[in-house]
Length: 520
Image (cartoon, rainbow, N blue to C red; front, side, top):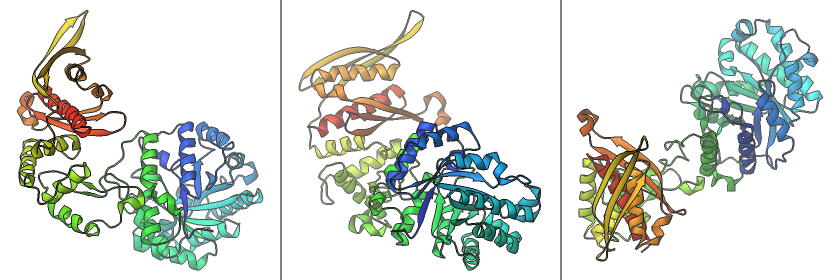
């Protein structure tokens, strides 16, 4: 069945024009396969007339079989004064051998005169000739009306004439583009209504986010009857980006209750978002609506208390509908409910009636005041709560350590010694490392391995340092956050001290304690 709203993804073309985005051919093929599996209806692969990479992509894509999506090649109308049959760029669109071809043409009289430097009549001919030529070769043609809204506001009669030129020549969809991203939702809705009154073919939306309204403008068009929306995953795109499909898709499906992608795909939305970020080598934005790690995070005590009683009080949907999850954050703004919900999330039995709860909350707030931060250090938080509850004996104690550097063969060598005690037995080890923290990490791991062989599986995967009060110069207090993994689970721990080595050791000890306490 035809969906009520078609999703046209242009991540591989418009999205790749964003600052810091550089997809290889292999990257583009992997993303295209993932988008097809997700269930978008069109995948715009690139502009075969603009660079060798896109030509190679379409050559490789010919060997792929897409189950859900139709692949589109993107280009422009023929050049002024050139027969469409003689235009090399138009021929490259045909050579791409895609079932869909999308072309853009000028709507604005200003662009016709000042950018194309041609006549209004020639621009109309360029649109019609190109669409007609592509249709004669059996292509499904999407016409992107560039600067549709700005052009309409400048000269409404001519703007409509350009849209009708594409429709009369056989274009299958007329897409209204807010190319500069400067229109308001009310303007978009009003002009889209005018397009509907003058056109018979389906109308689509292509919006940009220059005013922070890319998604709002797309939805405004859909609300008045548009049935096709173009955008990119995570809002990648030139300048401030394109309409973000990871926001449009759930808004259409959940809020507007219109069919678009398969229902099962919605639960894979966060996973898709992170996959594309990973391919682009970008860190996922935690504040992305719907799919960001902070989208359903709760920090304020009153908020968490309300969510504990009624999740819909501060959540507009069930996070699992888009593959996301609820997160309770711990900070100096936390209340009792924060601690209870976070403890339960960590697998620790805690309730509002637990006698130690007040002491735990006060301890957390004091540590946050001293510079600790538990939002990304759930491991340290779990250790703190378990110690307060005395649910677990301490797996080990550190009785002393020493870190030194020496010159050797023209290089600096770091060496760390550490002494630990487990059940009355001691281990004293020494290790060399690439730096003082690496050496200390190795020494601690080797000492504990005598008693707990499982620590050999623990690896430090990330290490971050932040200076908390830079005004004190080299005496500044330092916060160290580390990420650890045992190959199955991942966890974060934190340490704070005037001495970066001491802060690092705190985080390392917490990391080992968390793993050993959790696994008994």
